[in-house]
Length: 141
Image (tube, rainbow, N blue to C red):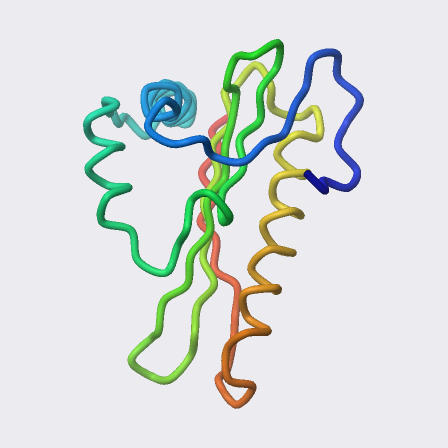
């Protein structure tokens, strides 16, 4: 997998989503990240499975990456696109990182990878459409 500028951290691996075996790990990362940011959200593997079975304009196998250290998922980012009623196409992404792994360059690596991926997707869309990135960030510290 081509991930530029990943920090040198022993055991760090960036990989693509691997299917339903990742659901419980995603729920754990999401819950830990949201709790640290004081955005209480408790999700289960079943919640993730349900959400991922209804995704639009996103192929998690291609439009998502996962960060692991020593085989444990510590973060992920997922991207997709949506059409706005005023004619813009929004290229959206979200990412979550377990608090202990923040401020080490992992989040930035995932962000830059996702922006590159969304740009690739945008090149397949009609050039006359106005295209913009949208990301929401929550971090409490």
